[in-house]
Length: 314
Image (tube, rainbow, N blue to C red; front, side):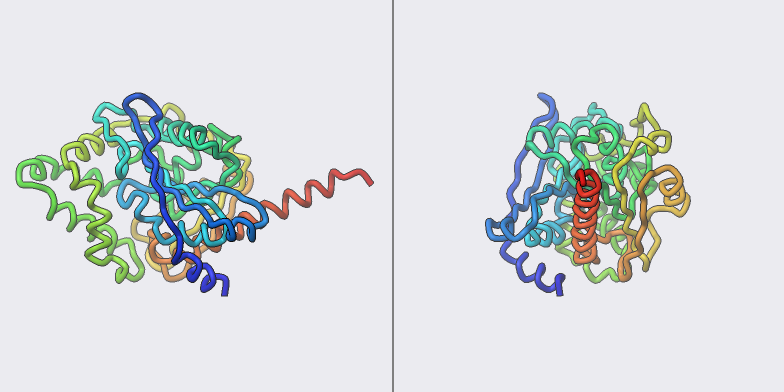
């Protein structure tokens, strides 16, 4: 019932975009879905939700989740890291995940947003985890969408794509990139019917818009190194961390060893399996993602209320 209500309300949601400079040469794109006045009034309080995408899809990948959150009274902000989507693509940028987390923190400062639930998919999951301990005042909880504790932005698929870079430059990229992107989305899905030509084109568009800059960024990501391995810093994350795992197709999702690492190092961790989805839960099960975020927020409120009651003098 809550899913049907959210879907009905979400139809009227409006998106806005801002471009925020974090340095003179680096600008990140933020897509914003705010609840209406009526939706804000019906919510018990306003807790922002930050959505961090992976290298393909960018903010577009969250187009179904954001209106569901706004319909429930939550302002949602999709922040595209450096080199992703329509954010800046400097060839000599620092694409290490620590630097990406620090840029997201700078964007949150600029927006005046704090005490947020931070969501990450693909390498955005590792950025979210880093943000939790590097800027703990900004993060009350983390939700990972089939992503884990990695120290690199690039994937094996990206590494393979780099071998095609000379061909892409010489012969033109549009058809090749679109086909590769579509195949990657289909391979990681439980039911690939969502991967329509329009959707796969939208996922590929930021790359084919400037193939030269995209190749330089992917090469820079491939060679970026973090100063602090994430596995050695997970113990610093005191906030609750929740992991949603697509149950129906494990291609491209978080590995069992990564789940075990999170379980052994994090103070407050739980993993839940989502039926009917592969690695792109926000595409195949946006209703489940939104519901899990709302449940997480309610549990945070309940814990805070219980703590206040326990501290009240009798």
